[in-house]
Structures are given as C-alpha cells and as structure tokens.
Amino acid sequence: RALMGLGPQWVEKHDLSSLKVLGTVGEPINPEAWNWYNEHVGKGSRPIVDTWWQTETGGHMITPLPGAIATKPGSATLPFFGVKPVVLEPESGKVIESTEAVGVLAIADSWPGQMRTVWGDHSRFVSTYFEQYKGYYFTGDGCRRDADGYYWITGRVDDVINVSGHRMGTAEVESALVAHAKVAEAAVVGYPHDIKGQGIYAYVTLMHGVEPTDALRKELEAWVRTEIGPIAKPDLIQWAPGLPKTRSGKIMRRILRKIAENDFGSLGDISTLERRGLPYRSRLGPVHRTGLIFSAGALCPDGRDLSCTWQPEADTCRIPARRRRATC
Image (tube, rainbow, N blue to C red; front, side, top):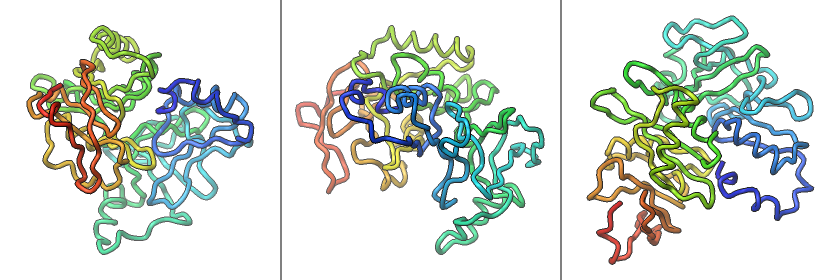
C-alpha cells in the first residue's frame, strides 16, 4: 500500500524480470492494493502468495500454493497442509459448519511449530489463546469463508467499533477509503463520541502528489457513505503523511487509538515501532488536530511543515525552536 501511494513510476524504472513469486505479509491486503501489486509489480504473470500466520504459529497457516491453486484478490485462500481452521460464532463459540461463514477464526488441532507457552507466564498463555473458546486456539482475528472455502481475514476482532448501536469492523471502512483513487493507505479506529458512543476516526495517507483539502475530505466522506452506508461515514479524517508501523509492516492501531482518544501518557511498548515516525500531537491542539511527525518532516492537516530531527538516543523528535509553538 505504501508503494502504491508513491505511484507506478517507482516500480517501472526497475528491472523486475527476475521476480518469480510475490509475497505479502503483515496485514490483510485489500483487493485494491492486491490488484495494483499484481498489475504493476507482478505484471499479471507472477502468483501472489498472500499468507495468514502469526508469530505464535511459527509458520504459514493459510496460504496459496503458487501455481497450484487459483488466487483471489484479498483472500489468504486455503489452509496449509495439516492445518484445520474453523469459523466460530463470536458469542457462543459454536463451529459454523456451513461452507459460507462469518465469525472468529480459530484452529481446531495442534500443528508443527505451534508455540507452547509464554516465557515465565504460562497462565497468560492459556488465558489468551485457549480459555475464551474451549478446545480451540483463538487467533484473535475475524474472518469470512466464501462458497469456495477460501478464507478472508477481516482484521483483529478487537478492531470493531460500536457506532450508535451498530457494530462494524474497521477493516471495512479502511477498504472503502483505499478504494478511492486518491488514497494510498488508511487506518480507522474508534474514539469516544458524546452522541454515538463511538465515532469513526480515519487516518488517511494520500497518493503521491495529491494535496489534502477540505473539499477532498468531504469527497471521501461522501465516498464512504456511498460504498457502505451513512452509518460508516468517518466523523474525523486526519491527513497522515505516513502511519506508525512495526518493522514487519503492521500498522500499530493501538497507538492510533490512543492518539484519537487524546491519551498520550500511556502509548505502551513502542520498541517494535519503525523508527521513521512516532505519534505526535500539538499541546495546544484538540484531538481532531492530531498528527504524525516524522524524521523526514511532517505536515499539519492545513499543509504547514513541522519538520523535526530524530534523536534516537532520546527516543524523541526535536522540533526546531522557531517551530516549537507551531500548532496544527
């Protein structure tokens, strides 16, 4: 998605003839990014291996076999050999036997490479992965299984927001935003809303060369209304030059959620945060003026520069004195 935001010219100036198979890991890839990847990097002729697995699983669990099975944009496809995934009803924990199913992804039996404990805290290992749904390994992910038995990962089950009594996955709103031609990446979280209970806060990274404007913000709001419905329209859209990610490319939504909630004192462990960026909010600005500041410089929503210098020894970003009181 980040590469897509820079435009195809960055790909086309390189010789890709040696590529045989393309991979994608870290997060579920939305169909729009999958198709771009296939067209501009794979040239429509290299299989894309979109794998689902976790650090805890020790290896791929759901994955296409390149050249052996048909792929679908956005689907992790079928279980790997010996892996027995099931789809559970979130509330009852019952296995959904029908081929087509939507629910919680769990694993029925053990497999080679499975983790055995959490170092020094075995009770945490049991409570996290096995207590909620007895007899199954709880992955923490939601999924959809289609008529062909293909699995589609819909995101973490805790990435669900309740807007005016309607539960919706943030991945659905993110996918709608990224389907817009001017959007490269999007991350959606919930935040406290006086009327709705939870509001929809969207961080949006635009395609290279696209300028953030109020008109575009309204255009994206209308776009999501059309794609999903009025209930899914973002309450706040924050322009973000980039998103905080782990070194493996996963968006750290936990940090984005804290920023959206105006909670800056408990960001938690950021040791896995890729060091090109860190959360930032002007002390004088309200929550909807939250931004991300980067070692290469950052922009406020209105386009003003807040460039800074990354200081790894202090684990912070130093803003030049003349800009320290600048606010978004």
